[in-house]
Structure formats: C-alpha cells, structure tokens
Length: 144
Image (cartoon, rainbow, N blue to C red; front, side, top):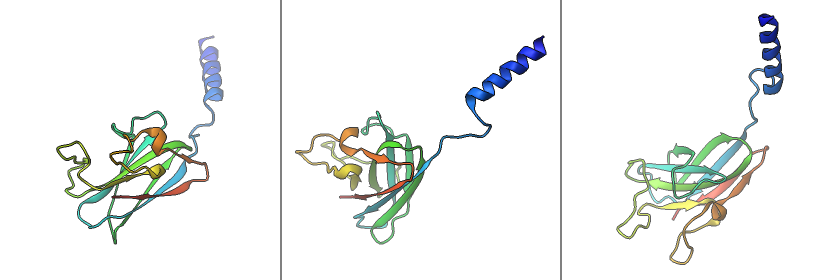
C-alpha cells in the first residue's frame, strides 16, 4: 500500500512539474553601450526586473571591457519587462561613485532614453523599462 501511494504521488508530482529538465525559455538581451571616453576600468550593466527599484541593488550585474568608446553586454533572461543602467567604473571599485551632492561621479546611461538631470527627477523602473520578447532584443545605451 505504501509503495503504491508513494509511486502515485511521484507520478502526480511529475505531471504537475512537467518533463525532467524542463526550464523556462530564455531570450537573449544585448546591450550596446557607447560614449565611453577612455578604456580605463570596466563598463558595468545593472539589470532590473519589473517591480525592482532601479536605485537599489540589481538582480543581475554584467561587466564588459571597453574598446573604442563602446562596450557590449549579453545576458539570457526570461522574456519580460526590464530596465538597464550602465556606468563606467573607471576605478574598478565595483560601485557607482557619487559626488558630494549625491550625483553620479562616473559616466552613466540607461535604457528608455532616460537622462539624469536637474529637471528629470529620479530614475524609476517606469522611466527605464523596455520589453524583452521571446525572440530576444538589442538595445542601445549612451553614457554621459
């Protein structure tokens, strides 16, 4: 009796979960960043998912070398809505440095065409968002 119930539970569980090894399909995101004025340090892309605070810690961080003022980031993610912030980590300290007024002291840019200024307000997910379809996508970001 115990063996039959255990086997039945396993079979029902397998039907609910799906085939072994089945994973959610992922899409390819390519971020082409430009506007870097030197090759010092690294370019860093911070990737946020829907509902994340783009002023907080990202879900994913990708680093890239800078060549001829450009960097390319690639990441596989489930299709959905995302936001990206790219910055030039000139001193390779793994963080975006700020000046004494709280403004970024290293060049940065973001998806959605958002540019930080005195009149732009703070960045938000809604201002930076873009859709990643199942077929994948490439976006451009300009750092300033």
